[in-house]
Amino acid sequence: MFDTEGGNVFPPLVERTKWWKIYMLHFLFMWNTRTFEYVSIILVASAFPDNLIATSIRGMASTLSTILFASSVGSWIDKSPNRTEPLHSSIIVNHSSIIAIYLAWMLWPAVVQADTTFPKNSLFGIIILLDVIQVLSTAGNNLSISQDCIPILVAAEMGSDYTLTHVNAVIARVNLFCKVASPLLLPVIISTFSRWIWIMLVILMTILVWAVEMYVLHIVSMENPQLLSLKIHEPRPEDSMERLGVNSIEYTSIREKTENVLYRHPAQRLRHFFSMPIWPAAICIAFLYFTVLVYSSPLITYLLQSGMPLTTVTIARASGSLMGFIATFTTPMASEHLSRRLANKHARKGIVPRMLSSWGIIGQFLSLMPVVLVLQKLSPSSPNDVDNSTTAVSHIGLTTILVLFGFLSLSRLFHWTYKLMEQELEQSEVPASQRSTFSGTGQAICSCFDLLHWLATVAWGRPEQFKGLAAASLCVVGSSAVWFWIWARRS
Image 1 (tube, rainbow, N blue to C red):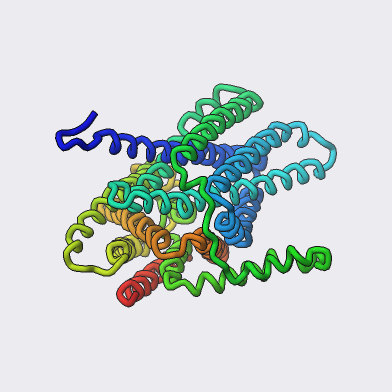
Image 2: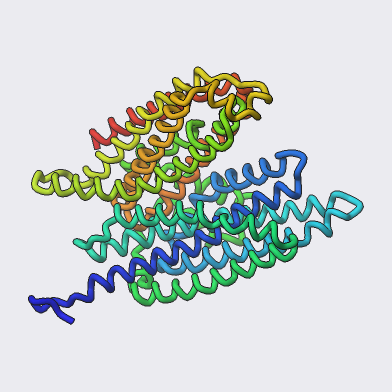
């Protein structure tokens, strides 16, 4: 069919269908991943009910693996011959490791009955190793689709409604939806069936989603020749070292190879990371991983110890996720509005994401100021007060609750605005052949600050010390806001 001017009316529909297939591909991957994250928490907690050591080991292993190998994963994506191969490989490795972990947990009851702890510890070590592979393959898939595929597909359709801002917002929306929705049916399945049966049902669901995912990937690759075309690789500092390692492999010891993989190549990538003009923006977002002023376990634990009802905290946490979801709609709208306003003013490239990023991180800082003031007035209560929700609410006060959770949830809207715009800056201002390596290195730095976050909560773990952590977190967010604003003005 054709419109009155002879133009084809089908291309907009074709374009929309093409992007929805890409969104579906990411949705299927994240559905399996988010389901696995929830199931793993349940399985580890049931296997080690007496303490949190196993959970801590699992978290530390994941964080350290990201610190050590995220930049290598990004480099592998940049060096791949085309853009489909990393997606294909990360899906296979990720879902294979997930299924292997499920099968290992099915063996757990038999291993626990052994006379010694060696089989139990060995099996848990294998699970941790597979979990590390799963974490790195998840990072690889996210880097591949966000830094490698989306920018090239958006660039191929200049003038389209599907801009980087719009596509990034939908991808973030998919992530948030899967995080909330994927675990909803699992408690019913777990309570209805025996352990062996419900794990098998989850395995079958993972395989079914995997099969559909591979089919969608095939369609997406066929409909987007940019994903199958050969990449144009630019030489990078570490390439000469890696070629040297390959050419002289027979003369290189295992110790030297390990040193190259774990130290020399990451050090080269780190120097390359800081050679990019955009590195301050990536560091500023890494600083935010240090803060305790988010809906995470340290803050929730402190609020419960201060007499805050669990129901209130749960509703507030859901409102924080809702504000992040809303940000995926408001950010593209704000970006489009600013782009129209600045269209005739010959604004420099990247001014819109810089402006919105600055507003986002400054808004997050301003929103957290009332939160810290309220937290300073709270004090841990006795267990009897915590158990009595009515007394707790009257003791704390409705106004205090509304101010605390209202501004804390509002800060998540500004945080997601900043995060989406910072991602767009990386996609548009880092060379395509180095984009995944840069973002992978940034993820490693974020994990370093995340590790510092947990170490700080351990070092200052008493409830009365949380106020100091909250104040320090506000200073970190404020410093990031000032630094980013200065960088955005000067760059």
